Every structure is written in structure tokens, then in C-alpha cells.
Length: 268
Ligand code: C2E
Ligand code: MG
Ligand code: MG
Image (cartoon, rainbow, N blue to C red; front, side, top):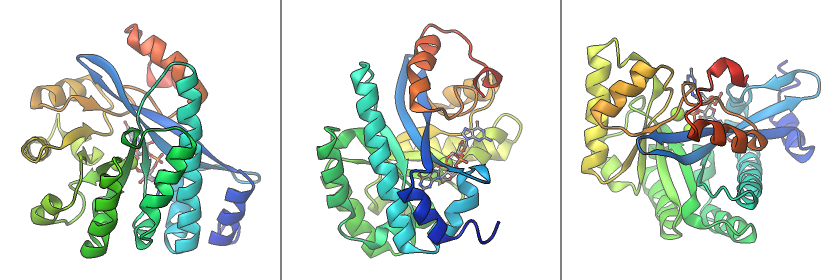
């Protein structure tokens, strides 16, 4: 597998269109609304089959050219999906995940803007998700790029929050518009007092800093109820929906809006 999953092979996969995106809804239950779709990349390898991002992203991370090519592909495919949904009357913001590697290039904000313009997608409908560690590796440079992204009207989310080592001071200085609570705290919230306290603190932090707050990895009704009690309304996780191809979104949305329960098992 080592040889077949090189950075070089991944670049070829991008060129050969072996990658695909799935989309996972972020919703509020009260009031019932689809808030956003997060784009998640997959590799349909001709021999190995479906390769999850955890198996090939580390390789891309080690090579800036590959990571830039990957992100460019992801953003392009996300814009295409946005257009496809818009044609069906579904206008919903998208999130894409961006790597620390992508933040080396000062032209990133301009390139994103051009791609959005070409696809007729408003900048405010694109949200970039960055992990804490990615965001704070080189604070001054990161700040420069992120400020440009925000000036262009795109949203910025801090992913897997609580697992990194950022200082609150830095968090305050960075122009994030949203915090995503890491799923490790979310899944433990109903059983662990500590996790519950952490979740509550993150919710308060987001509120005090005028940032939106999303809980990821919501798998049970009990967790969703607790999160809503604690004050997070935007939920993402298998309880709501698994990641799915863009073509499956309209049907999922219709069923979910009607209150039909689509169990995780029905969707795989
Ligand atoms: P992430 O951005 O934190 O994405 C959430 C991950 O959690 C996804 O895994 C998703 O399928 C999974 N997930 C969602 N809900 C639940 C749940 O209720 N329970 C559990 N156990 N898991 C849940 P996935 O798709 O394997 O992605 C893993 C990571 O790979 C992502 O974490 C993200 O950091 C990275 N990634 C995915 N797509 C891209 C991409 O296009 N570019 C970059 N740079 N990174 C990406
Ligand atoms: Mg993410
Ligand atoms: Mg996450």
C-alpha cells in the first residue's frame, strides 16, 4: 500500500478524477433548518477501492504542491455541487476543510475568490474549516491570509476545537467566525462531567466572542438534547445524517424537514 499511496499517486488521482466529495449536513432542530453542508473528500482508488481521508491526507500534508492541488480540486468540486443544489432550489452554504499547508500561499484568498466568482457562488456561502494546530503554526503569516479571506467575505471556522494547544489570546486575534466543538467532548458529554464542563465553556467562549458554535459528532438523541440545553443549536453527526453524495441531499432534506426519522443505518 505504501507505494500505491504516494503523494505522486495522489496527484495523479486528482488529475484522473478519482477523488469525490461527500457532504454532511449541519442543522438546527429548533427551528428546523439546514444550516450548512461540510464537504469531505474521498478517494475512489481503482484497485484499493474507497480510501478514507485519514489514510491519504497525512501523505498530502507532507507535500505542499499536493496539498494545494487537493484543496483546489475540493473547492472546485464544492462550487460545482453548490451550483447543482442551487438549480434544484436549495441554496445552502458549504464548508470545506483546509490544511495548514495551504496557508503558505498568500494568493490563496484571491484564488478562492476567483473560483467562487466563476461559479456564481457568494463568498459568504463558503466557510473554510481549519484545525487549531493548522491555524496557529505560524501566527503572523496565518493571520495575514485569514484576514484576507474574511475581507473577501468568506467564513472561517476552527475545527476540532479543544484538542489543540492554542491560547485564548491567539484565538481572539484570529478572525474566526465559528467554533466547532471536537467530537471527543461531544460524544462524552452525557457521561462525563468534565467533557460537559468543557463543552459548556466552549459554548460560552463562542458566545462571548460573537462566534457561531457547532457541535460535531452528535450520535444520539440524548447528546443532541443535552447540547441544546447547554446552548448549541447547530449540530452535525450521524444522528442527523452521514456524509452523502450531493445527489442524495435533496431527498434527505425533504425527509428530514418532514420529520421523518432517517436512521444512520438507512443511509449507508
Ligand atoms: P473533520 O473535518 O473533523 O470531519 C468530521 C469527520 O468526522 C468526518 O470524517 C466525518 O465523516 C466524521 N463524522 C461525522 N459525524 C460523525 C459522528 O457522528 N460520529 C463519528 N464517529 N464520526 C463522525 P472523515 O470524512 O473521515 O474525515 C476525517 C478528517 O479528514 C476531517 O475531519 C478533516 O480533518 C479531514 N478532511 C476531510 N476532507 C478533507 C478535505 O477535503 N481537505 C482537507 N484538508 N481535509 C479533509
Ligand atoms: Mg471539518
Ligand atoms: Mg472536526
